[in-house]
Length: 58
Image 1: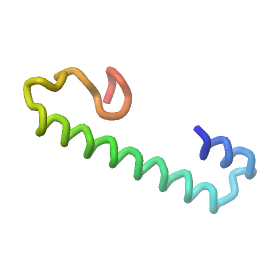
Image 2: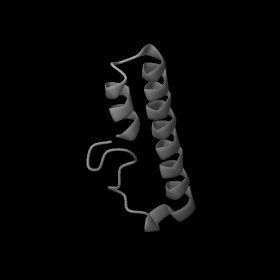
Image 3: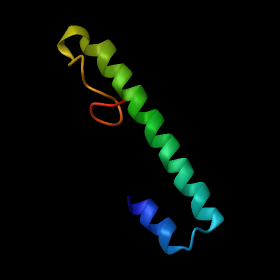
Image 4: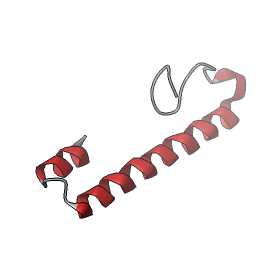
């Protein structure tokens, strides 16, 4: 949200567009990898319905 607000305040400058895209991609990959690690580490003890990025959706 912070980077998105900076992006909007910069009048959608292309350098902020690149930064915003980078942050979204890196945080998405990080959450997916962390979710996979928890599933492998805890197996059956890890909640099966827990989602990696958006609760109840993905």
